[in-house]
Image 1 (tube, rainbow, N blue to C red):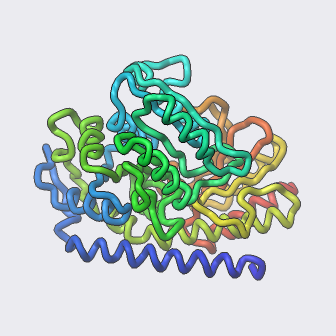
Image 2 (spheres, rainbow, N blue to C red):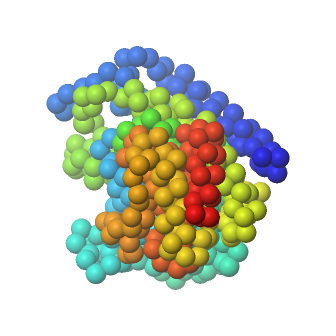
Length: 399
């Protein structure tokens, strides 16, 4: 705890800035209890839904936004943003290497292309990051000048890899490079795990659209489901067509149970993300002292809430996840086992004793059962509970 005091101070300062931003957005758009009421049928004139869109647009630094419980995951929201940004015959260019496992089916990188971008004759190319994890800007410029590109994809977080998360400043550099070559090329950012970890968001530095999940950072641990896309108005409306239907767009969609948990979750999100970051920093320092390789290291700059711990064997990965599960408030008695999760190329083991199923804002850990057997830790509604969970997981490694 003494070692990480300066990191905690920095995290608290960022949380203060982001809390001020969120509070200002709530006040600017005159949130009242009428925003929490439910709607039925088509959901026309749903004040709570429409105000929530305006709030997220403000927070993300974009002209428009689409916040809906109907997005079943972050992947769903990102997919809608990609389809909204591309036309048949164009190329999607990833500047952060191979996308996260669940997006590979969206692109059509696997054998089954049905419903994918590939089925709509959208080509795919990727550029690897430099060895130090920075974007390869020279290669990006060269590719854009040689290839007709419709959209550039940026995955902010690390996914199941050892690379670091990209900072908002680096994403801004990508946007500047792309738009200087062709202002019509859309930059789409997978913002999952990155919201509120810095004082700015990708939309504030030129991203045309950003997307993520409400059961990760921006839901604050309270949102029970859903996702968001924030960006340029035409992209948001086209994305709404993917969620509902062309011609209907964002103007329909009832919420019988209302929107209160989404509002409360977004309001609490800067604080909750700070708790998750503190848990990640603590776990990094603890496991470094225990002799394990971690990434990022405890004193590295962070742009997502994920902490990688390289355990080196399937047995230790299983034990680590068992310890995280045992420390959970929900299903602590359950033993995690690896299984073939939809959208993943390898069996995945996951510890997730969460109030919201699969919520990465809550303390959880998972990892693919492949070498070098890395655990990816994220979340923590409170640092106190996160600290206890990490310490218990460490003790399980010695079992």
